[in-house]
Image (cartoon, rainbow, N blue to C red; front, side):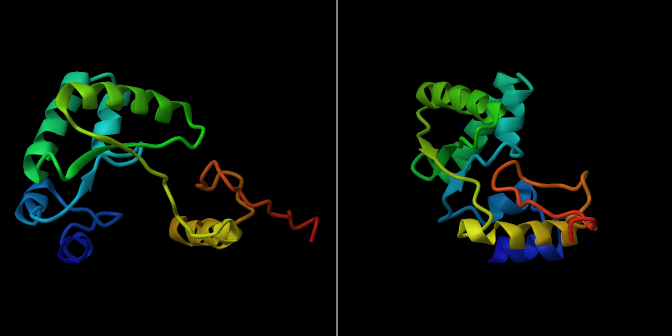
Amino acid sequence: MRLSSAGYMEGFHYKPRIDKELLSAHADGLLCLSACLRGELPQLVLNGDLEAARNAAAWYRDLFGKEFYYFEAQDHGIPEERTVAQRLIELGKEMGIPVVATNDCHYLRQQDAEAHEVLLCIQTGKTLQDQDRFRFATDQVYVKSTEEM
């Protein structure tokens, strides 16, 4: 809760965030996963900088402890996720970091997809009718055009 509050109150820049200094100060007792495609480690892997990925993974493993840091593998049908998962599995074997399968969940039930899309529109200042709005690739909601209504 302390980290979440600090992300909103002290580190907010478009979205809540925390830096490594703050994370280090409150890491004791936390479990850490390497994150989705937007995370530091997956981005380093996608950029082909495996040495930097190795260094970042070692930093997190050393901060949280080997029993509390895991590589995260996701598969939502996005090709980049498969690339990252393959590299993290290899890196995990090399570094002794376990890999866990996770899912990037944003709502509990499939029928909540429409409400989630509405929230994304509010967050980004778009409407459901905007073709160029931000959306997730899975469980997209069909939106009638104004002519169909």
